[in-house]
Length: 430
Ligand code: ASP
Image 1 (cartoon, protein in one colour):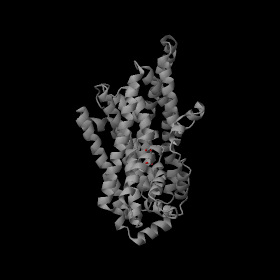
Image 2 (cartoon, protein in one colour; image 1 turned 180 degrees about the vertical axis):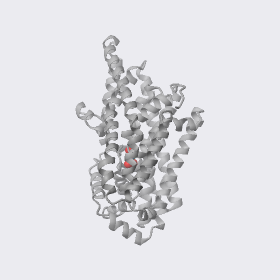
Image 3 (cartoon, protein in one colour; image 1 turned 45 degrees about the horizontal axis):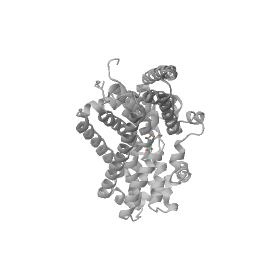
Image 4 (tube, helix red, strand yellow; image 1 turned 135 degrees about the vertical axis):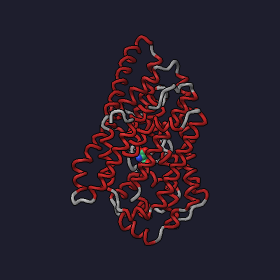
């Protein structure tokens, strides 16, 4: 077991977790047992990863910026990051729209299935709370800018969902370090360097339990999953989303190959453990520490680039989520015979872009923001619960898959930016 690469250990943990989940589902009280005695280990692992996320963002971002020779290199990284993130997200939404319009998965959903799904899920507490939560999103055009600026740094550090605020503070902190007398900055830089190394070591230590943790996470997902019959009815819709995600992955690999000249296998091998964790946890934020470690240490992206591109990406760049939102919105419209004009499809592009930027990097966030996409095309408010009920049963497995793409997209962009700035170092993937 010792010499086996990490991603294989994680894969083995996942497979055994699925098998254990199936086994326990067949026992009386098995679900309870998994919930009481196995699932907590998965939860502990996710908590450990989240625990490390904010210190890691702060130390590596400040280190990355204060190591720069001048601020213009930072501007260079920033502008490229935003341009690439927005364009890959628009590409993902367009792929989703083309697929769902050609394959029309919603057209095959019978009125009986709609009735059945509505009865089972429309009153579900999480659907109602999703709709409420989406309604609470402030909708002023510049609200997102206000939300990036913290008014109290301790509040920002104390809340994982305020990562963008921590990024904002770290950037100003790092830039100010560059601007003061180097003599005064030196002790702080040494301290931050030391802290950064310690935090990275903590990520390594936490990863030692990853194979066991994914076992627990997957066993829990399997015992809690909906019955197979309902999932089968949504198979065509699910397959459309997954096909779209696979196409995005191919698009990433082609970009990597054409732009960096590197073998796609090198990229996948380097990032695989982060992808597997994204799949098991459904959270880009929880996966962030591992994504950073893999991209820096195994793909050779300079810390200057990865320390900015990856945390920003985890919070705002969600190609998988935006594709899913486009497919789900059109699927719901097709199934409920809600006519869509071409202009509606254009507004899906815009709102899915904003909704994926606004979605938190946690499980199920994409579905909350889907409400906003549906509202933008004039979908009747009284039918929202029915619309969400249609896709609810299969949301978790799709969340797992789209989170993999969200994380992979961030890694791809950081490799491309590093290459463009001459900051992609030669390192073996494993
Ligand atoms: N779970 C996704 C992520 O963390 C967000 C979503 O699509 O629900 O990236």
